[in-house]
Image (cartoon, rainbow, N blue to C red; front, side, top):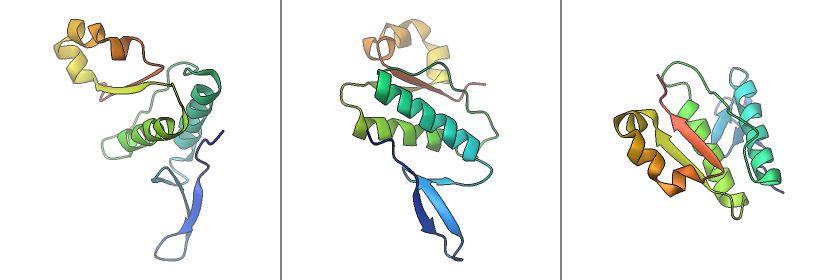
Length: 116
């Protein structure tokens, strides 16, 4: 089972770096990457997420990119597992339509973006 172990590289200054599905793993985001990888492992092993995972932080810190990396990894590794991403703004504008969508209601992993 491949969960996308971080690849080791070096940046332009020769400093060792790690990437997970294109996401740059740094000391300040390492805990978030571990949490997302744990969700990935759980979905691959059990076919569902273990519970909610909240990525919180100011704009531009990589929350959406990390969520995208998770969805991409699952798309490559998890046959039969469905994952969807939806904006909280879209849900707020039309909750009945959004959750009437069978793809969202029955997916194994739902990423809800931009919750304010």
